[in-house]
Image 1: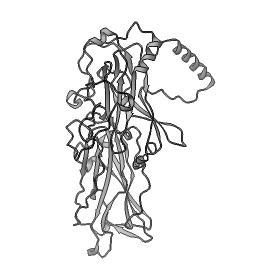
Image 2 (image 1 turned 90 degrees about the vertical axis):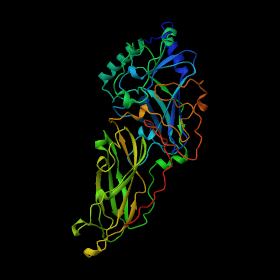
Image 3 (image 1 turned 180 degrees about the horizontal axis):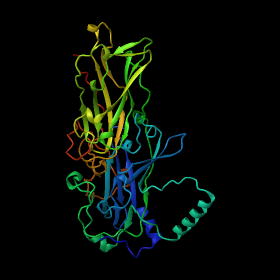
Length: 431
C-alpha cells in the first residue's frame, strides 16, 4: 500500500514535489514521433499515474489565441486508476513516444502544429473551463474557491510523495507489457491500494517552438493538377471506432468543358500509415461499365463520395485507437470508346492525405505502446510497466536523438513504429 509522507508539510512538500518531478517533451522534426519523459530529479521516491492519456498541449500560433489539444474520451482517464500507478525512485524516468497530431487532430492538415507555433506540454488533469457565470453564481463560486483554498487539494492527483516505508515495498505493477493479452481495460488483481490524500494535479514542461520543417503538416494548398481531372481528399473523420472510420473524396473537373469519367468507390486504392505501421487497401474490379455508369462532370464541377474504410481495407486495420494518414489513388482505365464516348483515362493520386482519428477499439490503446525509433529502442524509452533506472540527465539532454540506420527493422507485435518518410508511390500498370 502506498501512502504519503506524514512528516512533510502540505505546502512545502508540494512545492518540492513540483520541483523534483520534471516533464520534458522532445522532437526531431515532423518525420519522427515526439518523446515525453517524466523524471524524478529529487532525492526521495514518488508515485505517479503512468498514463500518457494525461498528456495535453497548449498551443499558441502567432497572431491567434492559445488553444488546447486534449485527448477525447475514452482515451483520457477521468480518475486515478490503480493499474496505472508506478513508483519513480530518485534518478528514474518514464518515457513514451507518440504522434502529437493525435492530440491536435485535424482532418486535412494541421492548423495548430505549424511552423512558429509555441507548444507547452502538460501532464495531468486539465482545469475545467466554465462559461461566464451570473452575479449570483460568481458569488457562490468565490465562496467555494475560498473554502477550497483553506483546505487541501482534492484528488485526482497525477503525482504524490511517498514515505520511505511505502517506497521500500514492492512497486505496484504498471500497464501490462501487452495490454491485449493481459485484458485491456481490466484492473489486474492486486492488493488494496489507498489513493493519496495530497499531491500534484498536473505538471508543466518547457515550451517548444516548431521549426519551418513542420510546414509538411500544415496542409498547404496543392499544386496545380497535371490533368483536367483531379482526385482530392475532402474530409477525414474523428471516428468513435473502426466502424465509423470514413474518408470523403472528390473527383474535380478543372477544365472549361464537360468531362466524362467512370468513378466508383470500389475503384480507389489506399495507402495508410497508422499506429502499427504502413498498410494498403487495394481497389476491386467492378467489371466493364455500361453507358449509364459514366458520370458527366460539368465545367469546374465535381463528384464526391464517402467511403467506409472498414469495407475496403484488411480486417481489423483500424481496430487500434490512433491516428491514420490516408492517401488515395484512382486508376481510371475505361474510355468508353466501345460505347461511342471519350471518357477520361489515367491514374490520379491525391496531393495531400486525409486523417482519421479512431478513439476506441478492441485492441490496446496507443497510449500503452512504445514507439521504437528507426535504429531500435532509444535511450530513455522504456517498455510498458518498466522504468529506466539510468540517472536522469538535465532536461535538454534527457532523450538523445535517435541515430539513423540504413533500414527500418520490422516492428515487433504490440509496438508502434517510428513515423517514416513517405515512400514514393510506384504507379501500377495500366490494364
